[in-house]
Length: 177
Image (cartoon, rainbow, N blue to C red):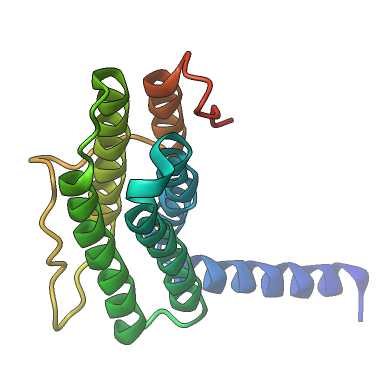
């Protein structure tokens, strides 16, 4: 076979492979993955601040973000309706857990209370952004009730920057890179 023909065949195979891969996983998956990965350290920062009383709820939220990441991995491997429903269920569970955390955060120190409420609101906004990205399936619709009227259009870096601004100057929090 001539070198030009070989090169053309290899190029065609590579292009077809990239085309199949690009069509296989929707773009929203990468966006949601990025959000889910920053959710764990943001939620964990609350434990650093008021560990004993909110630790169980914060752990639920951290585990929820981890579960969401795992269901997204499963969906990427096999993007079907069942796996999409698992992603939706993970988002629904996260939303329920953040609502519990909002109700449980009864901090006596006003400055600490304001920081905790700010971080919890940021987590709610993050979950809203995730819910807005996850599409409905043909037989079900995404039923997470958003905590805010309009989902955020913030990026992962925007969430990190907002967290760093909220917690700036408080040595109990670690800035996000």
